[in-house]
Image (cartoon, rainbow, N blue to C red; front, side, top):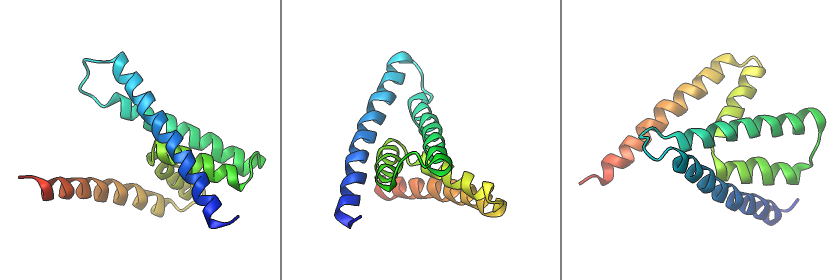
Length: 127
Protein backbone atom coordinates (compact mmCIF):
# COMPACT_ATOMS: atom_id res chain seq x y z
CA UNK A 1 0.00 0.00 0.00
CA UNK A 2 1.40 3.40 -0.87
CA UNK A 3 1.96 6.08 1.74
CA UNK A 4 -0.70 8.44 0.41
CA UNK A 5 -3.39 5.77 0.56
CA UNK A 6 -2.43 4.94 4.16
CA UNK A 7 -2.52 8.62 5.15
CA UNK A 8 -5.94 9.05 3.54
CA UNK A 9 -7.30 5.98 5.31
CA UNK A 10 -6.01 7.12 8.69
CA UNK A 11 -7.07 10.73 8.11
CA UNK A 12 -10.61 9.91 7.03
CA UNK A 13 -10.98 7.48 9.92
CA UNK A 14 -9.62 10.14 12.28
CA UNK A 15 -12.24 12.59 11.06
CA UNK A 16 -15.02 10.11 11.81
CA UNK A 17 -13.54 9.17 15.18
CA UNK A 18 -13.18 12.80 16.25
CA UNK A 19 -16.75 13.57 15.23
CA UNK A 20 -17.94 10.49 17.11
CA UNK A 21 -15.99 11.54 20.20
CA UNK A 22 -17.69 14.94 20.12
CA UNK A 23 -21.14 13.37 19.73
CA UNK A 24 -20.71 10.67 22.40
CA UNK A 25 -19.12 13.04 24.92
CA UNK A 26 -21.83 15.62 24.32
CA UNK A 27 -24.55 13.00 24.68
CA UNK A 28 -23.15 11.88 28.05
CA UNK A 29 -22.86 15.45 29.31
CA UNK A 30 -26.44 16.12 28.17
CA UNK A 31 -27.54 13.15 30.29
CA UNK A 32 -25.58 14.40 33.32
CA UNK A 33 -25.61 18.21 33.06
CA UNK A 34 -24.93 18.94 36.72
CA UNK A 35 -21.84 16.77 37.12
CA UNK A 36 -18.34 18.08 37.56
CA UNK A 37 -16.77 14.66 36.94
CA UNK A 38 -15.54 14.10 33.35
CA UNK A 39 -17.99 11.27 32.58
CA UNK A 40 -18.05 12.10 28.86
CA UNK A 41 -14.31 11.59 28.53
CA UNK A 42 -14.46 8.46 30.67
CA UNK A 43 -17.22 6.95 28.52
CA UNK A 44 -15.28 7.77 25.35
CA UNK A 45 -12.07 6.24 26.73
CA UNK A 46 -13.73 3.08 28.05
CA UNK A 47 -15.81 2.48 24.92
CA UNK A 48 -12.73 3.15 22.80
CA UNK A 49 -10.81 0.56 24.82
CA UNK A 50 -13.63 -1.95 24.39
CA UNK A 51 -13.72 -1.29 20.65
CA UNK A 52 -9.96 -1.62 20.18
CA UNK A 53 -9.99 -4.87 22.15
CA UNK A 54 -12.74 -6.29 19.95
CA UNK A 55 -11.11 -5.10 16.72
CA UNK A 56 -7.65 -6.23 17.82
CA UNK A 57 -9.04 -9.68 18.57
CA UNK A 58 -10.87 -9.83 15.24
CA UNK A 59 -7.73 -8.83 13.37
CA UNK A 60 -5.42 -11.11 15.33
CA UNK A 61 -7.49 -14.25 15.83
CA UNK A 62 -9.90 -14.27 12.91
CA UNK A 63 -8.10 -12.23 10.25
CA UNK A 64 -11.51 -10.58 9.79
CA UNK A 65 -10.15 -7.52 8.00
CA UNK A 66 -7.20 -6.57 5.86
CA UNK A 67 -4.44 -4.07 6.62
CA UNK A 68 -6.42 -1.19 5.11
CA UNK A 69 -9.30 -1.78 7.51
CA UNK A 70 -6.85 -1.95 10.41
CA UNK A 71 -5.40 1.44 9.44
CA UNK A 72 -8.83 2.97 8.97
CA UNK A 73 -10.50 1.54 12.08
CA UNK A 74 -7.79 1.11 14.70
CA UNK A 75 -5.45 3.97 13.91
CA UNK A 76 -7.89 6.31 12.18
CA UNK A 77 -11.34 5.98 13.78
CA UNK A 78 -10.22 4.90 17.24
CA UNK A 79 -7.17 7.17 17.13
CA UNK A 80 -9.49 10.10 16.49
CA UNK A 81 -11.99 8.83 19.03
CA UNK A 82 -9.39 8.30 21.76
CA UNK A 83 -5.67 7.64 21.89
CA UNK A 84 -6.24 6.12 25.30
CA UNK A 85 -7.50 3.03 23.49
CA UNK A 86 -4.13 2.63 21.75
CA UNK A 87 -2.35 3.04 25.07
CA UNK A 88 -4.56 0.37 26.63
CA UNK A 89 -4.17 -2.06 23.73
CA UNK A 90 -0.39 -1.67 23.57
CA UNK A 91 -0.13 -2.18 27.35
CA UNK A 92 -2.36 -5.25 27.08
CA UNK A 93 -0.15 -6.62 24.29
CA UNK A 94 2.95 -6.18 26.44
CA UNK A 95 1.28 -7.94 29.38
CA UNK A 96 -0.04 -10.73 27.14
CA UNK A 97 3.50 -11.29 25.85
CA UNK A 98 4.73 -11.62 29.46
CA UNK A 99 6.50 -8.26 29.25
CA UNK A 100 5.06 -7.24 32.61
CA UNK A 101 7.83 -4.84 33.54
CA UNK A 102 7.45 -3.05 30.20
CA UNK A 103 3.65 -3.00 30.58
CA UNK A 104 3.99 -1.46 34.04
CA UNK A 105 6.61 1.01 32.79
CA UNK A 106 4.32 2.01 29.92
CA UNK A 107 1.49 2.77 32.35
CA UNK A 108 3.75 4.59 34.79
CA UNK A 109 5.72 6.61 32.25
CA UNK A 110 2.77 7.64 30.10
CA UNK A 111 0.67 8.57 33.12
CA UNK A 112 3.37 10.51 34.96
CA UNK A 113 4.96 12.07 31.87
CA UNK A 114 1.58 12.89 30.34
CA UNK A 115 0.39 14.66 33.48
CA UNK A 116 3.74 16.43 33.84
CA UNK A 117 3.65 17.56 30.20
CA UNK A 118 0.08 18.86 30.59
CA UNK A 119 1.09 20.73 33.74
CA UNK A 120 4.20 22.14 32.02
CA UNK A 121 2.24 23.25 28.97
CA UNK A 122 -0.34 24.92 31.17
CA UNK A 123 2.36 26.56 33.30
CA UNK A 124 4.18 27.87 30.20
CA UNK A 125 1.18 29.90 29.04
CA UNK A 126 -0.16 30.88 32.44
CA UNK A 127 -0.02 34.64 33.02
